[in-house]
Amino acid sequence: MDQEAVLAEFRDAEALLEGHFKLSSGLHSPVYLQCARVLMDPKRAMRLCGAFVEKLKATGAEIDLVVSPAMGGVIVGFEVARQLGVPNVFTERVEGEFALRRGFAIPEGAKVLMMEDIITTGLSSRECIKTINAWGGNVVAAGCLINRSNGKAEVGAPITALATIDAPTYKPEDVPAELAAVPAIKPGSRGLKS
Image 1 (tube, rainbow, N blue to C red):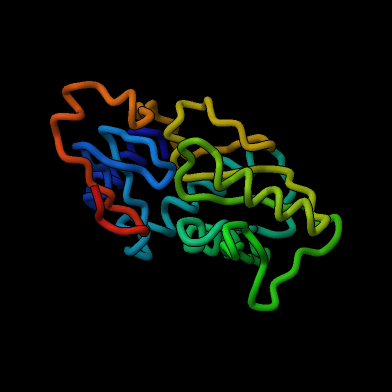
Image 2: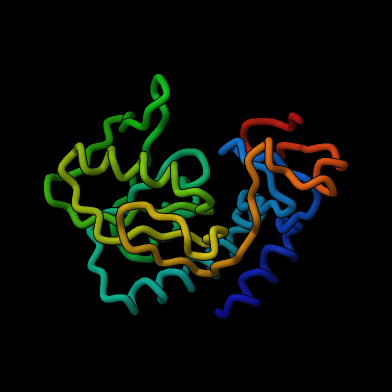
């Protein structure tokens, strides 16, 4: 699946939006990718994650466990793990930091894929990797369906992305006038707020 086919899946799911968006990172952007809309269709999720798994396998990475940050990475992490034939767990925020709950554990030395839906700044990925490392896991790869940083985000492990785009982001004080003229919305999991 090439990059245009991946983006077509997002467009078909009405998950590639244009306007003025406030991202969960606090940054602003004229582009928003609503991965939950893409993953709500199990067949589409299976296609996209299958294409990701093929791309990951081409890197030669050996994976024992997939770990994802909640909330965005839960579905994609599960489907990638299912297709790889390995277990999957996810981290959750507890008092502002990622932690394992629900009886989850990471075996010492496990070769881990940290799997996200979208990488923008890489902050959630880095925080998830910090938790994996604290448990003694060995993060051999990081993955995402879309790397919207155009490959600039650093997470502390090699990133495999199904598609890489350059979706500009701006600090609130640096939003261009033409974008600032449009009311900002926050369509993600943390609410529709301006």
